Length: 130
Image (cartoon, rainbow, N blue to C red; front, side, top):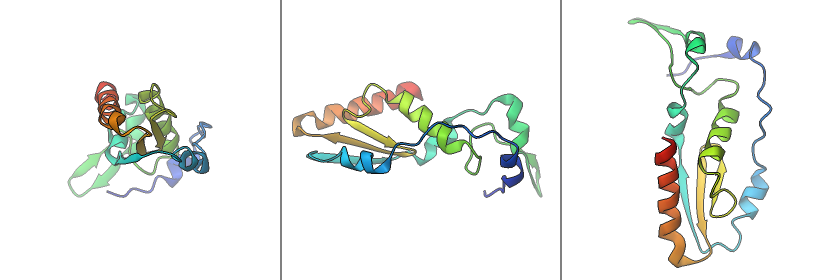
């Protein structure tokens, strides 16, 4: 589903939450023995919209009018909201054995024997945060 939220986005204040500097994220992986790249694409759809804002995402189909109850692509602050959420979810690991850039997460290790435990910790944090 592709919806043009241009008019809605014009009326939304910009969330100033910064994205990480991609160069620093890449540089932080230097010296790692193993890397596991996780694409958390579906994570966007796990973030609930404020019920008062759901009607603002309404769209019409031949079968009726619908609106999103979870965050969707195309909203002005979706990237900042997701980055803020994933950083909170993984804050105990961030910049130690995990890096996160929006919906891309990298689990990294410098000691092979720690890799499975690092992955388990990441999945446990993701599960706990739902």
